[in-house]
Amino acid sequence: MNNKSNSNQHSQDTDLDTLQSDIPVYSGPIVGATLSALLGFLTLVISHHVSRLTKGLDQTIHAYGHWIPGSTGTGPDGSIGSYSGKETLALFVWFTTWLIFHCLWRKQDFSLRALTPLLIGTLFFLMLGLFHPLIDPVVLFIAGLFGYASP
Image 1 (spheres, rainbow, N blue to C red):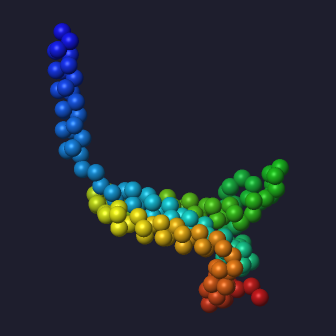
Image 2: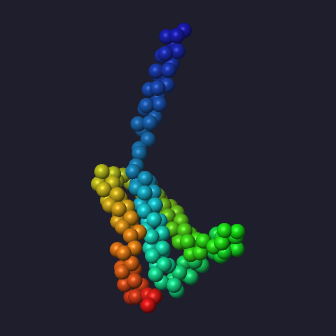
Image 3: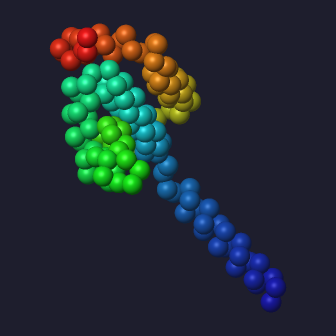
């Protein structure tokens, strides 16, 4: 009786191994998810600096987040201000690019060995974007090109 049970178990394990090896695994969806998160983070960094340095665009960015409770200061804790708009823009970019990349790359296979240093380098670059003395002159220069720089 025990021998028949072991034989049955071995047959099920072999079927499971065969089934798993027949399903192709693509790296495109994970690359798309990672890249979309980085683009959402980039949006948060850019919108933060733009709203902090240019008051005209601060109101525009804040307008995107008026639907978030507490964005206008009516709650017991006051207002979170334009952060609501920054959050909204970042979430929109993250979710939209995730959907687009997933649809485009769901059957693609990328070399993760080549992309990993690129994605880590991009994350490091984004972290440098949080360092105000480094990024403020760049943001003011670009805002000045479009006529939005504060005096």
